[in-house]
Length: 415
Image 1 (tube, rainbow, N blue to C red):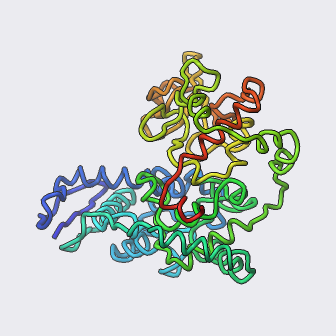
Image 2 (cartoon, rainbow, N blue to C red):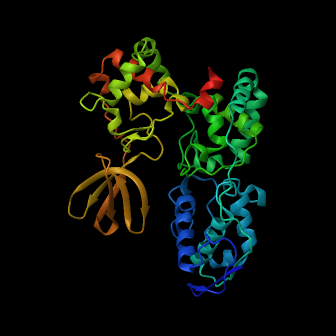
Image 3 (cartoon, rainbow, N blue to C red):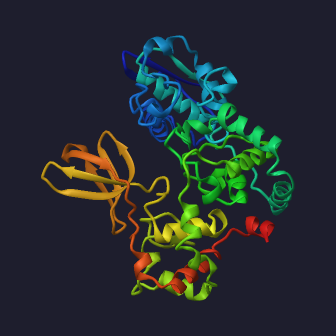
């Protein structure tokens, strides 16, 4: 059994531990792990110090709980905190905007979070970790080709039925925690991608596969695994594919206008691959984008972009990159106290400052005591003049090559 006491804000070791040798026993290590988990999964809503003032809080219908409030914590047992983190707000009759983390984090990690939350509140409550807590994260089975083929058949036959779409809408808007992180019309959080254009940006098979098990594709994603059953994932995909935002999507005008020539031209994937990888060429995409372990890290990884993204979205990304900036790749402009401007993609922010990736793909840390002010920009780091630099056939060739970057397990069900 592992036991902690939080007395007047101090973190005191109060017991011993038995079980897995991989379990850390140093109380400071456990506290630091809880802090890292909190900053990654919780701070955007609850705030860095648990004050309920995270950057995402202003977009939510319900104010996030002030976890630093000693009075709030005094009324909640450790088991109750474990339940709400593990099972989500809806299961404990609280806000459905609080996600489920029990399918993403190990029991040990959740207890580390509880210990850190108690530390934030400084309310002197003992934390006793039960014996036998699991140290390994839960692993959901990967989707099979049969699973994907079954979804594709279902979607073709029933995916546009009102009953299925309405059921998916109920889950997204009222039952699951989707709006805690994602925007639909003007409602919802700003942590994950804006879903107003889900039908334009993503293929149905990708939506289904991603929401079923996001960690399979990106182990470090902030999106928790919601533990969806196949039926739930299907109807959510159906709703998102059918969703039409209140504001008109300009991409339809682009596709039917000047961009029609690019989509109608037949591309050569081999020529497109050469354009993509040529370090002396006009595009030189591999300088910033990673494909199968090769390339830069300034822009999003493209290893299976042919599976996840629609051809129309890929074209827009090449010709008008500012239209939609992929979540996690927005740039930040920093003015230092010395009067210097620094631009890069923000990867992390904490008390010490900002971690960014500059235009050359180099990691940089900008100490907070050097920063005079900063601003998130609405301009992509990707060049916006490819429409002028590339010929129509070159764009078509690039699209053809990007279309070959697929995941066989998903692609095989579509073909």
